[in-house]
Length: 530
Image 1 (cartoon, rainbow, N blue to C red):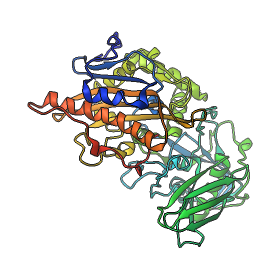
Image 2: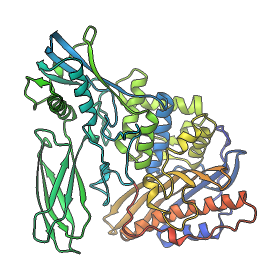
Image 3: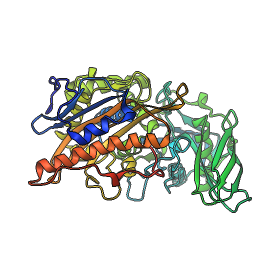
Image 4: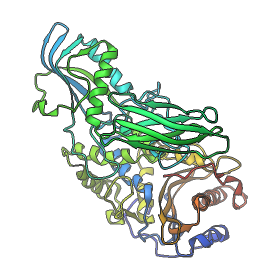
């Protein structure tokens, strides 16, 4: 296990897990569930704990460890996406008679999350989960920042008038039939953000929304009700997504509530957004700003057509950190397309051979320990073994990117989805670097929550810096309500805390073994992790 795809440890459902871990796994919620656990010291391959290491588990978003590992290796951590704009036609002074073509390059954020220091911003609960998880928040950056930069570059090139049109070139890849569907051009994760803030009881709530691009219009009928009242906001949209309506109520003492609406045509949206950005920069476009993207006018190639602007993304390791920290599903699926493009293909499913080659030829991990049909971990096919994930995690520790990859994961009690647990009085805070995964649905037959998967995989750091790889997860749990689901989340996290403290005891003379840290439990206001 210390770096090869050698035989995994034998199946052993009760390999000295200790009373604290055993007590958690024997709770009534797990009567019909299946637990898996594998912890390994990668320095010597010693198996610390093992429970069904070779069995397939539904992974949820822990499968993103595989997807992003493949993309990190194929693209390189310092890879930057450069999105060019070409002038097609004839330049006469400051007038372009012809079209501007933005050639989409599969850039995940197009500058919409880039902080002044060049890093990519995120919050513990991302706006992409706003319709599913309460507590999602926005980053402060302007979603249209990349398009504004492009527009200013066009103006700086000397063009003040485009006597023609603006076209988005989306031919980089064919959007695959997976959800969420990646597209070559992505602005604000292909979403409209809708933020409702309460006012006084009986009064209309305040609405703000972004990015504001024609012809999108938003109407709010949300009313503020008394403090302690019900917050329940519904969003409806026209078939083309451009007419959005909010209705419902928000309590006067509630925090601002974020909802989202899908952009149905990212290319038409991006075209209009760029025309509007050009206008802000002092460049006039004679074509109507709204309407379909005229991609039928695109040339076969851009030979002889000068590049008049280009937006350069942050390095890919920043995108990897975003995807892993907030469990960014669109970014994980887009990674398949990015890998396919790196091999010269416009078929996103050609990203899977890239991952396969990485596993077999570079990481030396048996690919049959995984099953994948998307990048995010949300389809019935997706499966992982604890042994396979431990081998993959051990591989990274032998590379020059070991620290960068490890710290791109959510950190328990500190960053990303990891910030939702182990926040106070928790000895493992800042010492567990791991990707969680969740698959949950409602069991109509029994009127309860079916927790198909709650998993956790990554690294445990002892006080002296020694690292262990681990996987812990449960499939097939049940909970009567949302609090019961939170309890399952906490149980998986608590096992990781116990393992980390055992690692500290092993590497710290005389340190007592860890007992359950009840103070680490998340309160009801803490929200589930995708």
